[in-house]
Length: 106
Image 1 (cartoon, rainbow, N blue to C red):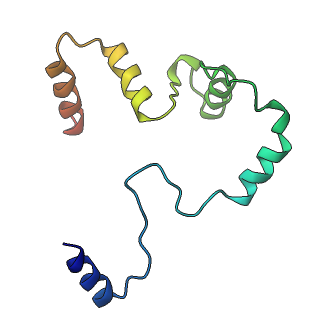
Image 2 (cartoon, rainbow, N blue to C red):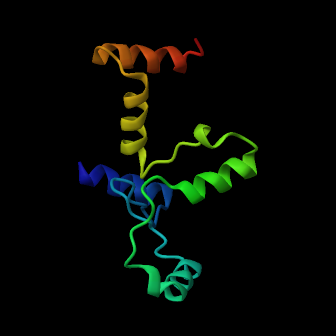
């Protein structure tokens, strides 16, 4: 199997592979982020607000929407969990049907 990939890489002159199999930034940490971390090292021991109140307020103001219409999560898993918590399906099939219905624009 590996031989097939090597052959294709040579034929297509592919010299670099980006790994998307996990949560990895193939370009490394941006210098601007390193600078911001260094500037704010004194507050890194504080946990962020789990309700994201200040960020939600700013996003609501920028987008001219009500605060309760802004939902933030720490990644897709939390966002899906929050979504399920809101729609409260009686069965898991209800949730699948909801997603499929919305994907089709229904």
